[in-house]
Length: 215
Ligand SMILES: C[S@@+](CC[C@H](N)C(=O)[O-])C[C@H]1O[C@@H](n2cnc3c(N)ncnc32)[C@H](O)[C@@H]1O
Image (cartoon, rainbow, N blue to C red):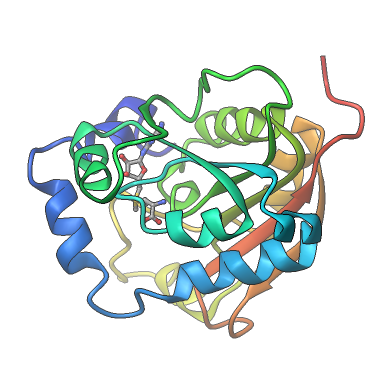
């Protein structure tokens, strides 16, 4: 059992967090996630190239993915942290709102795709993971793209060895757990994207929505 959802949400609330995240967290590899999202949207939502797709970024953090997402359609960003949202608003104050990924304030099938970057590895409580995945699937008509830390990597296996320090607030999910969470939410996993198999922790799942949903 991991931290509660409230603890996870609380982690980015301190004032100054958004400024730090925007200026310093991505001093290296800043382009990696935007490039992957661009690649996955181009491949799995090709009609988004006409710019008419509606796309949710949740959590959007400081809006790091916004320019890439807007290349494919209209953007809405949601995040639980006012500090992160304040940083996001500095470049564009529109279409950003505070909210909880586990209780999204949107009707079913509002978006063509929901994108969730760097949240799932914080949700080590299986119920929180299930709630977040269910909500992302519920609000999307076609696709969910979500990143997670892949338990099949060498680093994840090394950290399971005795006497090895593990990250306190983050963790790995197996592809099977991710596939099950999406399946139970009514979406079919159609692709995993990982830069270097068994090495790169950050892996993306692409799930197709629109089949029958659990009631
Ligand atoms: C590592 S940051 C990732 C932000 C952005 N997706 C990115 O890749 O830059 C994690 C974000 O998740 C947000 N967060 C955590 N739990 C949340 C929840 N239940 N609902 C909405 N946002 C949440 C935090 O406020 C933080 O902005």
